[in-house]
Amino acid sequence: MNHNLSQDQIASYRKNGFLIIDDFLNPDEVSHWKKTIDKAVTDRKGTKFPHSEVKSGEDDGINDNADYFGKVFTQIINLWMTDDEVKKLILDERIGKMAADLAQVDGIRVWHDQSLIKQPWANSTAWHLDTPFWSFSHREALSIWIALEDVTLQNGCLYFMPESNHKTDFIEPGIGANMGDIFDTYPEYKNVEPVPSVIKAGSCSFHNGLNIHAAGVNMTPYTRNAMTCAFMPDGATFNGKQNVLSDAYFKTLKIGDILNNEAHNPLIYHK
Image 1 (cartoon, rainbow, N blue to C red):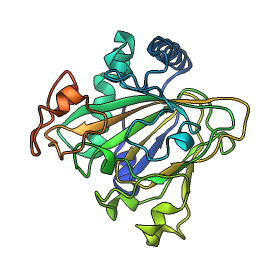
Image 2 (spheres, rainbow, N blue to C red; image 1 turned 180 degrees about the vertical axis):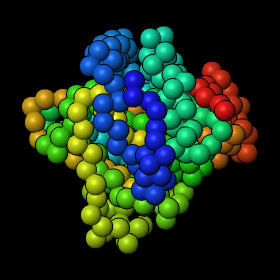
Image 3 (cartoon, rainbow, N blue to C red; image 1 turned 90 degrees about the horizontal axis):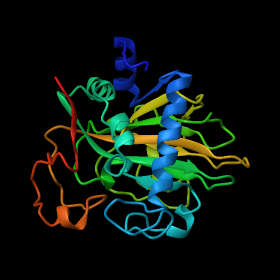
């Protein structure tokens, strides 16, 4: 695993709100990750969350347009909770240190992982932010996005709006079927040239949860398979939103509580 970040890489992330890392995993590691995650996805039998019977593509109460989003990708969340081998991958301290170094925080917790399989001819993912959907509000939350297959302009690569995370906030503009809806909230980015993340299998990107980003359509008869994990800085507090939290855990929380339950948000790195 190519996990040592240079000061130039950290500085680039701090400036732009995203970082692309080539050859993050070597070919053997890519094969292991893909086999492990494929098995874990199969074992979940389409169930989107560990705590719910909602299937991927069904209305989960998070996205407004379930029919459209059901044709964006197959999304299985928190595989680390239901598969011990995925848990070893996601709770890797080396990845946690990378996230902490980029976010410039002392400690990092898992918010949630998700397998994202963009099916052949799948819809695009419109410009959006991540953090406004989540159950905590922290400007340094971030995600890793690992390509398990080659990602191209044709099969739906990610796009990032450089430096946008410095100007966005925790307003939840939503995410719909229209690519440009985000510009109703952030019109200053309507004429900005985005940066595509065209990467080979085994490469990855990190992006800040307040960075405006999107993904294109899959204009191929093949899948575009990725594994992602969202990270929460240690010490983040509950803001009242349920998001991916189970009903049982959600009912125990009050606004301002520190989200430090190891069964839900394990600490994977601390200085």
